[in-house]
Length: 506
Image (cartoon, rainbow, N blue to C red; front, side):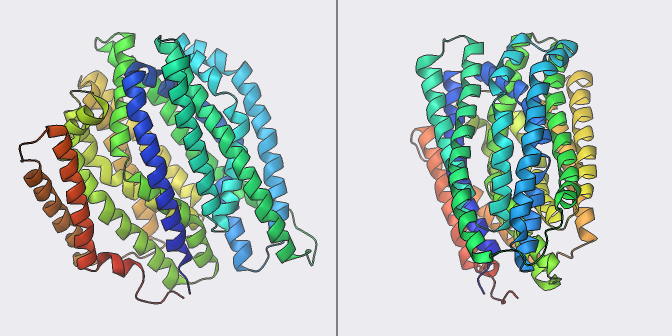
């Protein structure tokens, strides 16, 4: 039978590459046109907006994806209609509550925290997203559960294209050149993108639901309330994402505070945070193109295998995902460690981030593997475990940032040090939890061949970049050549063909 898990992952991967390519190019341009201070202001306001979005979404995407996959596997497609009506009503009520909180409560919170007025003004532009994003998330959860990845992928592409085009128009031709106007223009572009994605997703949803209702027919018995199931699955996910969002909000306030405490002014602190969140994180998260696609596809795939009590398929899918993460993240980690400073200079015109990039590369493998493992645990219904581990990792990250920046006075490197500590602890805890449910075994050959291939890729990059040409061009060309040879190495050694499953999946 067809491997729907790998097919879905491939669709999401292609989409993620396109989205990340657009997003990365956009990030480079806004850093050049708007500057890191404007990017820092936007990123300092964004976590407060995300907190309200998470509360309004109530963990519905994961809950809907899992329940939809279970209904399909058990031949109960007719229950999906009741589930979706309940989910839409729930997020509608919560979105209105979130809007009220944004208008009446957040200004008081900003005053209590002593937040900059520029950050509060950026947040005001983001408020419409509280009424948009939850509904888009519900529909993405449905498509994810049906393993129809093409529809949410197209919605995300539309959202990103609108965001990029409108953002460039606003910051280049419309907005005044002061920092706060540029930051507010970037926020407005994000909202226009969310609105465009919602409209397209709604059209796809109405089309697919019409087809599904005709196929499923009328229910043969009375629908039981699905609200308890949605809440039971959604609440732990909400707590997990809320922990991450609160963590981001505290980080956005803590980092500038610590930087100012050791001698930087407010403008410099916002600029350094912009360099970290807008430049360094953009580079280090490149492999999340793959791990994000895996995590999204894993939830329904693992849930379906778990519901069918098919342990063989479950372990095969988990092993495939971990191998893919290892093979395709390792070379990126090594390249960023060796050439991170040059990439920041070439792509963003930012100097002096070499030490920060090297520090981040130490914890990058934990970041990528943790995202994949979380997708598996959510598919197994272990959302409470994910929440507890995420909370502990977030606490470790914030404590590490405070200690490294304020006590050790490491400056920008301290931000990276705290991030490495947090992701490392979180990943190890999630791996320990996964090992209690699923046995994932990788041979030494599967572990070491990517290491050998990555080492060869670095040798090729160093050799090609030694030619006497314009350095920026030749280094990027060398990385492209090295990456292609690495993929060829994986093909020759059979690493990629093994993933497609020479063993039949039952």
